[in-house]
Image 1 (spheres, rainbow over the protein chains, first blue to last red):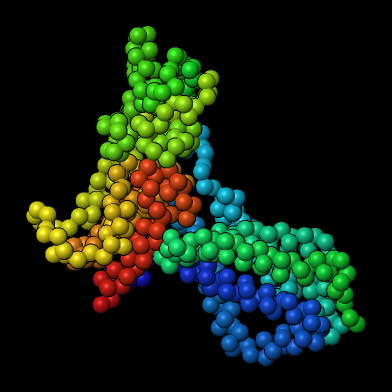
Image 2 (image 1 turned 45 degrees about the vertical axis):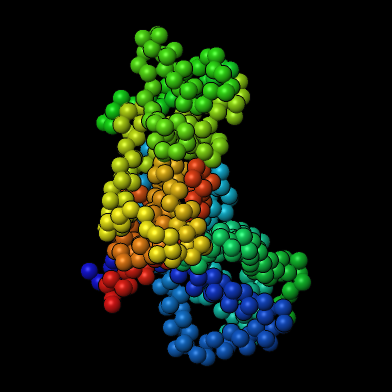
Length: 226
Length: 249
């Protein structure tokens, strides 16, 4: 049997795959956030960024393909582990209690599924632009991301679902960051506390960063500049 | 004190079990949890009922034979073995759920007694060194740094009680396997078989149907031997390294 089959066939191998793909996805979440925050620097900046990304379709699609692969692997592997975990406790406790279980740990699966449904909507909404007719004739042309984002978030339902999904994403990351380091075996007793607190701080910084955009739109701090 | 007990009763591995209500009366607050069950059993026998079957041995907190999940926590509300849990931790009139350690890999034998030999089979798959080590060496003939000796000793404290599995939301045995792997991996005598040990123990662990650690750390909180979750980190490090060496090099 070759290495990959043995690795993926084992419990620890699957955990590694979830951790490694999770790490890639966290990196993407941070990169995406930096892209988003350019909206506060005005339309020229963020629209130029969008135009730049589309000017290099080769590398863009390589990165997209890699991210999709990681995303799918992260989910499929987690489902495999979760199914095995359910089976490992065939008979459940009549009285269940816990000493350590925090909301973030308890909602890893549920939160992950909320984020998944959001990602599908988000891609249809802003990437494929199939949900909103206005996105096909934006004031400043095809790459007018500035106007598109503002028009999109002016709908409170869209903004509300976005904020909810980012909340679940941050919950997911507040446990996930520390969990990745533990699974990859780089966490020691010495760094455990700073890693846990640092991971939670990073997760909620990500929340603030992402939510700043729809909040700024809803409070009219960001408006379409004709 | 008087207690309302909700005890899991199950005739054998094949039959369906259920929770049965009992009243335990006149229990001294200084009785251990197992002594409380002894008193309950005497009361049951006096009424001509079948006593509740549960595991126990040394009753000194050393052997790891006693089990029981008490109000949802393995070994109950103090991080000791069940035999070292005293009734003064409970309130008079309290309702207490007593269930067996639950895991597919730990089939119920009867009532609260489960078969934990899956852990023995994992241990047999590699949790030892093959060479006969003979009697104690002269001091300093094998040099072990203090830090490594402490780490090995900490991991070797595992008494294989299975509370980690019982408390884990996924019924994972990774704290147990991590402790065994860390114990030997920290010492010079464990090095020659280090690679095969971790590969074989993880394979056996997976075969036995234990779940997968999702870093909740319930195991560490209930472990009566205070095994830290860093042993799972060691397992997570050693396994891929051994697999790479075994299948690539």
